[in-house]
Image 1 (cartoon, one colour):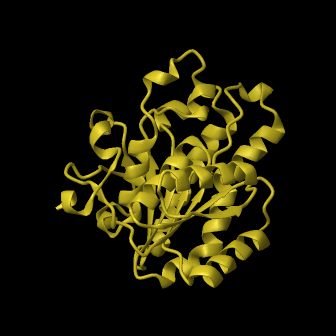
Image 2: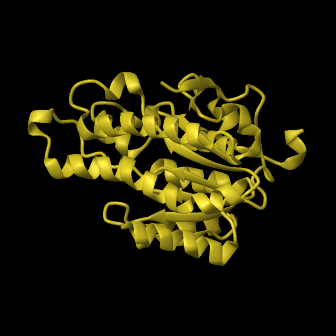
Length: 271
């Protein structure tokens, strides 16, 4: 089990929190992914947005530009079918274009709905295990030479409520999230003396397509947007999260602070 950390009560992201950093976001056009891409850009990072649908990435690109954010970099990547060579090509492209990589936030996820194991489609099981565990491992491994070259870098893996996803019908998704937690623990043990920090993040319930699919009887509009979780990811990407390395940042108690942490404040307001 990972140790648990909390977002510092007085922490707010500033417009330069991630200045001069290059951050890669997977699953970037999903609910959490798009919020993380925006929050990292607002905090000063150069953001590389990745996902399997180029058109969706282009829509996110256009939206971010219309919002006055810095131009993100599009890198389509289908994590269902990508090979180790494609992950290496992504890392090589980042080195060629930027000469560095300072952070990854793994927001891509595969969830086919709740179903008992006796009826679980093998293809859905294999897809969940691959997208949720194998692909984050392979991408992180390919990028580690760049990440460890930085004076401070971070990889953030997104978990789900362990008390819920270990229950009946969560299938391959539930198993994959348990495996992802173990991946975080092992990778932290292997990098704890390096400049690369490994983090897990456990968001509070939020308004996403995955939540809508899992809790189809729930009024999803009563849940907060992913913005606060996205700003918490900015904290983990920043050098201020040293104390949280190797732990899971549990945001389930943070819902009352949504109006405060779900935004980026100007430099002068952060002091």
